[in-house]
Figure 1: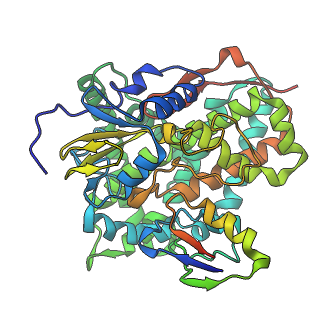
Figure 2 (figure 1 turned 45 degrees about the vertical axis):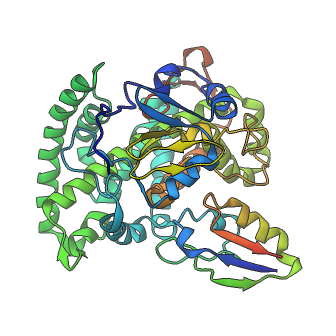
Figure 3 (figure 1 turned 30 degrees about the vertical axis):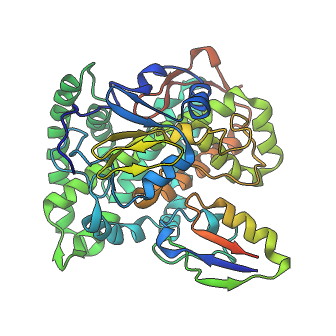
Length: 397
Length: 63
């Protein structure tokens, strides 16, 4: 890669995300960008908005993924496999893919269903509740603790440190990173203790971490550092994204009761509805990619070697040059192709688990409280890093 | 017509499988295990749906 003098782009504090920060419907902006702009440099990063361009970049052999300029997330190491590339990345995906494959995550279905039912019943008992905290946050957290085989008693403690790492406070990259590092140190201490406990009862457990402890990569057992790294990845990539997605979907169905009625009348629509709403809501709006060589995207769009690219999955998902009538949410769409879970070799490892959690959460919710109401004026959207509805008051009559 | 997988393009979204698990089998890693199969006119519509669901365009239907 050519040496570059451009400062490192941080999508948490710059670029298009800042322009749509708290919009309830950023889709309108994203769709116009895809239609009229195609690509533009903002704060030193080339923003890509069209499906075909992003698909080409994601597949390109001369493009590095999110970790192309080093690790992020306040953790010194690059996260496996999100922030590594090439043969090393392939090696780790080969180990991890089967653990997150559709058939494998299916085993968690009954646990997730019980969990969802319990959380909903607890929230219902309270009458009105704020559902980001009452439902959207605890469901993936408890699923995560089950997945890695951690005791449920650790939930409160875990949620507190997780929040500090995933949502560090601060207005600048330096402030954010410093706050993240403080919370990260506490979490590291927790993980080290957790792994020591797990090693002691390894032969009895069959969770993902126990399986990784018994696995080898390149003929060597995984190190403590590898295991910590993967725990951080599962937490960063798997908790908040599902929490946020749930908050977006519950809000959308709350704001559109007549569309919710379509699903209630024909439950087989739930699966396509989840897929279509995830296209429209695109909870992870963008990812970073890094061109190592010049890349010609056609029709005069050249990406020079060394370019940092902010690829907007959320814009590709409502790109009118690719999708028919992209701003219409249609549960009967003949074809739903989306970039919701990115594409290419860095396709979201947890996509099947995420889909499972979302489907079961909505199925359980619509079964138990089909006519929930939300206070649409109170909803607070945040479109930085991961789109979420952080204030989601639900009323049950 | 013939249903074909460009194996190097498959990254395991498994969305074809979600449209039709019988016509679009996947392996234990979650990747499509189709190589190349002849499909009759009776399943053409199902084949088109599965092919259309692939975000990578890894599946091809050759008339």
